[in-house]
Amino acid sequence: MSKTTLAKNQLRKCPTGIKGLDEITDGGLPLGRTTLICGTAGCGKTLMGMEFIVRGILDYSESAVFMAFEETAAELTQNVASLGWDLDELTATEKLSIDYVYIDPQEIEETGDYDLEALFIRLGSAIDAIGAKRVVLDTVEVLFSGLSNTAIVRAELRRLFRWLKTKGVTAIVTGEKGENSLTRYGIEEYVSDCVIRLDHRLYEDISTRKLQIVKYRGSSHGTNDYPFLINSDGITVLPITSVGLDHTVTHERISSGIERLDTMLGGEGYFRGSSILITGTAGTGKTTLAAHFAEATCRRGERCLYFAFEEAPQQIIRNMQSVGINLPEFVNQGLLRFQARRPTAYGLEMHLVQIHSLIKAFQPTVVIIDPMSNLTMGGTLLQAKAFLFRLIDLLKSQQITVFLTNLIQGGMLVEQTEIGVSSLMDTWLEVRFVESNGERNRVFFILKSRGMEHSNQVRELKLTKQGVELVDVYLGEGIVLTGTARRIQAEKEKAVKLTRKQEFERKRRNFARQKAIIHSQITALQAQLEREEENIEEMMQEEQSHQDNLQQNRVAIAQLRQADFIQGNE
Image 1 (cartoon, rainbow, N blue to C red):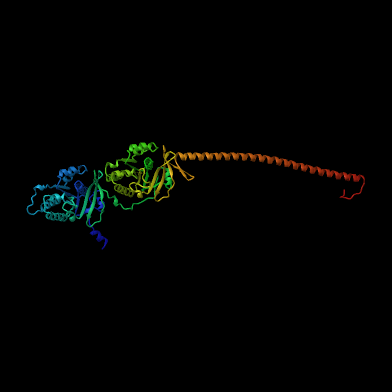
Image 2 (spheres, rainbow, N blue to C red):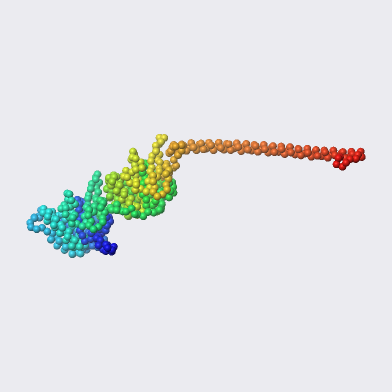
């Protein structure tokens, strides 16, 4: 069978327009079929049905009928007005028909046959009047609330679902949860082509709404429990767990804001779009390192979104000014934005939605979570872990660098986080206190940094008026010294070095002096030698002169005595 034939036979979808729902349903609800939305009271069934209707009208130009059995049109209109939906206007323009059907169980008497024929006529008339493509029935159990004959109920439910299908409309039927089944009568889920279950759970005083696609005939779909929220924009489903690990990566590096740290990270800083974690006990300087990164981001002209779960922005700004980090100028320029909330203000899903919305609105290149360890106050460890998984996947998919701080409680094992997400981190930094010689000092090191050559050296982290300073610790003779001990040892070594230098200079001067003396002695001896040589020369000349004179005298005397002599024997 060709691909064209397969595509033609595939189930067609009707997009709901509800954020996230179309993603986990792979396109929306089954087109021209009926979907059951079931759950307990207050879980959001009616709102989901109404948003399906309103989004269909506004976004896809599909008229709709909303048949209500519990709330009047005026009540429904008032209830959704806070979301910005004007049902009166949609009704006036004949894009929406709201039909309230009042059924009082006390007035129902079981006599003769019972069927929904009148309902079909009424609903069919409404559909035909405006050419509706979407229909919602809310809540279907009310139709049978006065009947005890379950056989009739089941038969009519089947007839209702078949009738909706024959009308070619995409329908939503809402139903109340039964004791041991998805619905009260336990039949709706079998005759529906798609079943979505909504749930509203309360754990440790924090409520969480969950959505699960229990069934979807002829289509692939997500099967997880997805948190969803109801806020001022309507319903938002959080399908971020469906994001695959296929996001793009870059080789671009960005500065940490601390030159020495950049050097430790191969000289170029973090990878853009990576996840960075810094762990440490209270007071080790985690927030200061985060502020340095925020400052460096803003200095590049990029936007940084700072989520503070422990301190107010004003407090962070004041504290950072004490170490030379001036954040207000970037806040005023619109490059830095703080979002401060207690984790217990609402559930983690609401936090995630808010983060999602702020990221979409602010378009940051860097997000800071300070501290992530406080998120456990807004849910269980498992929920916090799932929250961070979804958040990091979301940020990485958009090439946003995320910097997270994590508080390690005293007594905890180091090199681990309470939430257990360290394996997600591309770069992991750690700051510890070291106690020695009556003082506590911070030591800093890089536990890991994927994809780059990085330093394995321990540095002392100092908070100065000019910000964080990473200083070499004293290493020698089998000991590592920090703080005052390092300075004392450094002073000792400096004094020893100075003494050795002075001794060398003294010896050098003595040598020069001895050298000068010896040179002068050599010069004197050489002069004396020259004088002796001259004396010898003079004596030799005198002797030669004496011999010459003596010979001349002999010749003269011989001539006077007329003595014969042989030439050469004079």
